[in-house]
Length: 95
Image 1 (spheres, rainbow, N blue to C red):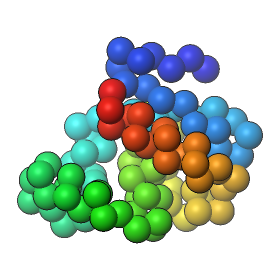
Image 2: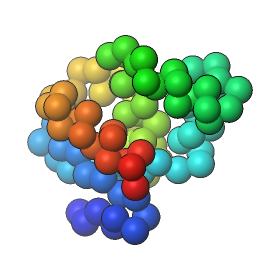
Image 3: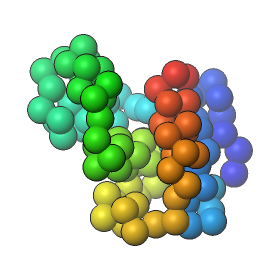
Image 4: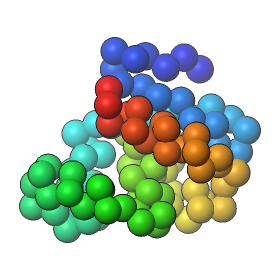
């Protein structure tokens, strides 16, 4: 699996397999709803004070944006390196 940087793709290893993360408009809308934010500015402020459970919500939305099945419960049980996940989340937002 190859990540298309021009599309904002980031790969993250989950349970030993590469999974595509992508920040889409749909993912942003999901996050605004999940965190009860009225705007992108509100979402940005909310994510700056994110808790670990919030990061699972963000990760799930990015996995779904990349075409995968982003289930928060499954991701909580998955083998994911926390530092790698944090870098991938930041990378998806930066692109």
